[in-house]
Picture: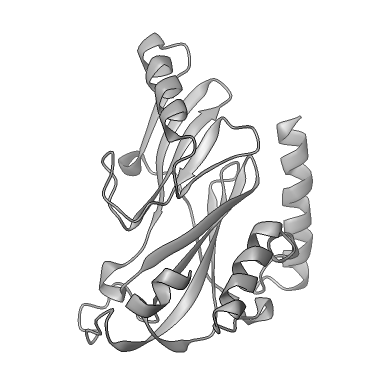
Length: 216
């Protein structure tokens, strides 16, 4: 049933992409998680519109370097899974999927082998337990992961604020979080079934990150 539901979701995304591949998919824009996020920003005088976002990158998410897979039949792995799921409930910045069998951990601290700029996906998919670094962001760009939410069990969104510089550019001028810098928001749409991540970026704006973070 899950595969059938996702097939419909993916089909809708593909149909929209055929119209305009560069825009934020309507399924994201209409989702309650996105609406709450963008409304909160407006209430804090950060005016961002959904139609500002443009596709800037698409890549795969699964990489053996950043992913561990265990069989649900492995008793020790199953024990760790059950304990991890239980310990992660009611923890701030850990969001569970509708099935409650997976979660996104976007805490801005170093934890369980993950750094503060990395987002962890953990959960059971069919007969496998997956522990995945779903994405990271550039500390050089003062990045901050501010929110995450599931669209369904296989599709989720992570929002990031960071300076609008190329994260691979080692010559980019340093601008500290305490200073006024130019930033953009990035929305990462992660598709677990089709091994894909779309990154959409907003228009740029000026902000002092240390003053903005408490309002996110």
